Image (cartoon, rainbow, N blue to C red; front, side):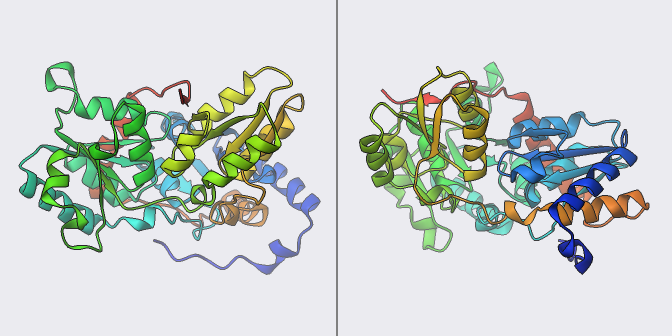
Length: 378
């Protein structure tokens, strides 16, 4: 990663009003050559300046479509900006306003460890194991996924990607006997259950344990091998939160992100990606009540947007992504000021050798359609 340049003090001393005015002016100056992408988990101040908003899948698609913009400023986290650089032309510049905006989940999987695990599991099982890598991962792991004939996925299309992986080659699938789900075990497990599978079909691979902590018997019977990783934001939601909110608000619908633990998803009414959650609330009847188990910025935005519906975060305490919060107005203005003067700061560049294989995995992800509706529990 390129070292983070120091943000000049003048930006932190500016008022919110001045920051808004300056950013708007810079956007006008750079119009036609600038595209700002904003992830749903960003704060409202940053989202106000995004040309497009979306989840990881939608923003990947949008990044690939920005053929005219010389500069793409990605208001998200590091792995998202990497994906944008992989999918855009080499002459386009991708900037991340704050290089310290990383992802703890992505950091839970190292490419060397993943490669060793794949080799080991294939040798032990004799099975065809195809890696399916959540987009919340490093470019090097995406490249490894492409090299091993796998695909990336997002929470919007993960079920369809799993179906592709397990589908026969004659039907255009990968013909996998088993799927290696990297790096979020909860997304993998919840998707397996949504496909009608059970706990016996899943085995968690812990890179800190010999053999990943998977016995030969468990490896033989499992179809879904789950890398031991998680999103710390979605681990904040617990079964008692579901029980408490249902008791406090009779008739409320609980919808959670599939990165939540299985026990939470089982108690919820539905599970879905950010785009699926947004669509479910947007199309709900006026007067309906919703408890949403995902990042608080998105939930609060939904509550403001749909004032005729009751929308709250599943837990009483905020569920905030500290990494997303590192993208703020001072950093955004600093990047735009530099671009306006012909200087690039915080550029994200993925080496060509890595980008080539990573692009294969990302392209497969983009080509496999998303699921429109959340998974409804019976």
